[in-house]
Image 1: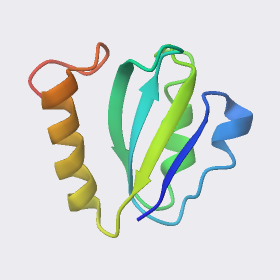
Image 2: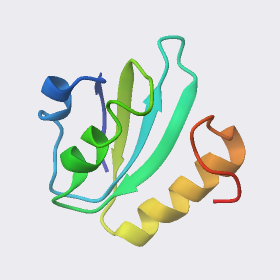
Image 3: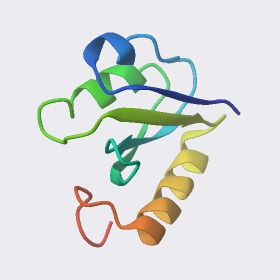
Length: 91
């Protein structure tokens, strides 16, 4: 599936595709992963925008999947591997 990277601003987030489930990463300006999450089809933009005033970052990277359970599995692997600062421990 597709991968896309945009600035972490409301305006840029509105340009992201919303037609498939995604895993998204909020990255710092140096490329460190601050947060990893998933969003269901039709809720991608809304879900990422919810973090704008809570989690700092400069870019958002999304990876699309055909099913939400595939995205959730990938999310779990990313969190275990990179332990993002703003993800809750034990997720």
